[in-house]
Image (tube, rainbow, N blue to C red; front, top):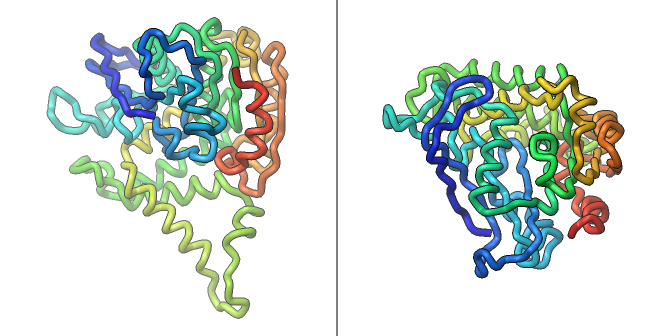
Length: 340
């Protein structure tokens, strides 16, 4: 897949208020040697919170030449979410009026804003129909929302480990992460994009616990020394993962993306969640993970029950919500028969 950029020449209005001129969306797509003569089926991948548009990088077992999402057989597209640290417009991008990062002057972002920006890329690429869409976690939010916003565009979709209205449980995690960011005094100084770095590491540690499970940690983080006095391995792992994120991401983008998660409500302005899901005409498959504590399987069962003709599958994993990135054989068994 190759990296490209789309620049929106008009003003982009945000759902919660505010606007941006010259909105940028970074995306990756299959090489297109035939230009307009390209008749390959279109697969669109919606990425999760801190991933990026290079799906071959974060889903290497499933995306690439000869793999499940074959980037040569299909025209595969993945667009970077608004607010991300990977090039699309957001708080860490440059405000043309000041020549400095927007920081908190960037408008608040909703899931619907992200989908509208993605759809601009779709139109830019001349794609009238998306033959297959897949998304996990907040990528699932996007996929469901897109199926409602443009019901005639998406032929078939798989929603993995996601919900359709943010729960108090999820918002509590998001607020805890924002509180962690706020405890870092450099966060509100907005002196550089390294502001809030220590807070970001703490926020990532909180998030990781929500992504994993009791079984998963106990399977991988036991102390090797049976006689150790103070357990440290899991703590070292948390610190490692916090630093790993802060090395590639910034606290401002993380703050905004957590806010976009709290906007997830497909029923807003549509007569409620069930009524909104009932308008979907996409052929839908909903996948839950038995150990997912962030989006328990009852959420995916509910989604499937409200969408006409939808099917539900459950996969097993020791690794909680992150199972959607790890249980590749189970996902392949579900998805492969659905591909065009």
